[in-house]
Length: 194
Image (spheres, rainbow, N blue to C red):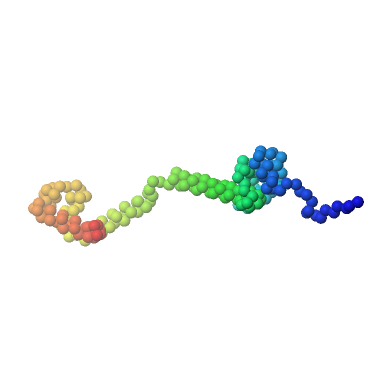
């Protein structure tokens, strides 16, 4: 009588994972059950390392297993092992989940900013107006008294050239010259057109 000795790890384990995937491609539910049991722990581990959230990782793992069922016919043993093929799918699916979550967070953040940000910054606008007024006042101070009076009456009080001439009791031609010279000095002082 012969004694059969089984060395640990050498017992017949049945069809390989690759063979079982070929059966899954043919719609074999029992083969899929074996594939599922053989890889789900590793798939969940890959998903968990990438996603870092247990609930999300479990969802990713289930999606991967559905993909295995649906796409088993695409597996090519000449390209690598079945485990590598499945874990690569798990990694890609997990990365997609992280990117999707980040994109959603970014969209929510942009929406929140848009909803809470005014069309313009009122404080900045007010500061700019004050600075512009100060600069105009400073430049008005560089004009001669006659130029400043002419510019103020014409541009701040809305008087016509003829009205300015009448108010200052100066000929119209002189008022036009004062206004032209005053505006040139203002332009140079404000740095407009340079």
